[in-house]
Image (cartoon, rainbow, N blue to C red; front, side):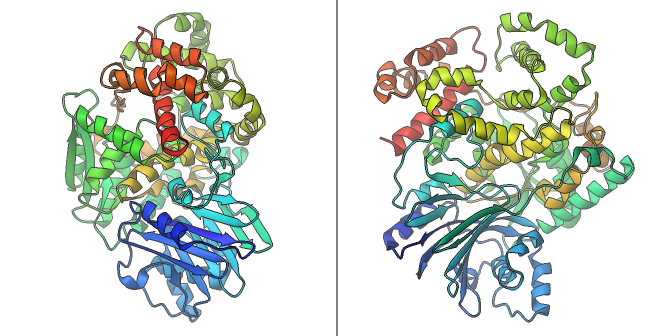
Length: 631
């Protein structure tokens, strides 16, 4: 895992060495072990290395093939590289390193662009062909590794992070469609970035570039059809066995490393499953979890301890205080180069920071919920589609839920918030309900907040929304919702969060649930295998029941709510009222509706705060970004 950047000139323009050096320096947290850049003809390649497989100097990048015709820069891991290496050796390829990078490069040379379908891993890479004067760029199937790019008539620039891309001569102008979507979702989905003319390469896409040609196309789609999934020929018992076998092999492949390795262990089902499979292949597996001093209700470390003892792992618990979370807030704001306001990133940052003190690679249980229906919204959708007497009563009582005070910070007030959200969603068709339940704020709030800036961006906003919501058909199944989640929520929220926070701490995180074989199997399963009236993520729980401690089952899912509301009313009150969101600054900025901001601040200190803390956090992150890049 590393950071990459590069440039290609269409008209033999100069690519300044200073641009490359600055980009390399900006990626030093992604790649602290070695930074290097080269310029060849029309192209320049930049690499910042975090050494994982073959840590020798011979595997430094940019890496050339034996003929020195091709050069590669690569961010990620190819977990089946040893099998591919054997196949290439049979075709006469002689390797000079033990790295997966060299296997990746030679796979492209021997098999051509279609070699992408042979890869099992996560990646964003660029390969330059000196003879053809062409550049080939690709990213993995599910968007685990990010890549941003900019194109004008003279250049194409690309990088793993915006902070590196902005080291090249790019004019910074806000993309108001992306900003509008950000204030709905608390993250930016799809190809657009916060800046006009800078785009993100979407999951499963590739780019081929020559001086007079640029071709961007999709190379991977999840094979899924609702009817076929509902007619899966395997019995439920056979499905369970296949899931265990697939996940076991996915974990086995992801244990290959030449540096210390461990696993995140929260005490939930997904991370416990990954730990269970890893313990079959590794003695004294390192596992890590975080607990919270003085807050037993949210502390899941007793369950993590149970799993660790069950599998005899070398378990470490990081006990956090409020000060640790507060420090993480400032670290996150300092590292953020594009607005991203999922507050759970604060916890991922802390877990990554402390885990990195022990290992360089960590396995995680990410994506289990999106693939197998593990969220409350999935249970809500299942209930909405079943249309039973309970859902009808909740919908009838919508005026009551609307009138009662709501807040995430209290058990009863949070339940009222959820009931109102469910009742409102019941009035919508499935695709609109899916979108609404993805959003923190509705479109009306954003229109009030940003005013005519939304009007100028409305076409692009609707286009992005339709791109994902259209995956949920009116007469489809809950699997449609999961497909939409995997296409939008997973890459642009969940995986972005993990990538940014782990890379901030130079930690590689591997996600066995996103082995493409597991994903494709998940979308071959009927809804009844994933969820019913009593259980979310049904097949995962049932398939691993004999592996895991019984205490993990039939217990309430706790989760942890970062105490943003408390901070905003105390420690950060003065900064919010007199700096980030002061009337004078808002008027000077001329971005937000002053009256809307005043109402938000007023709601913050009311007895009915609702989701105002999420709105304020999104505003704080945006203001911090604005000052860093636009003032």
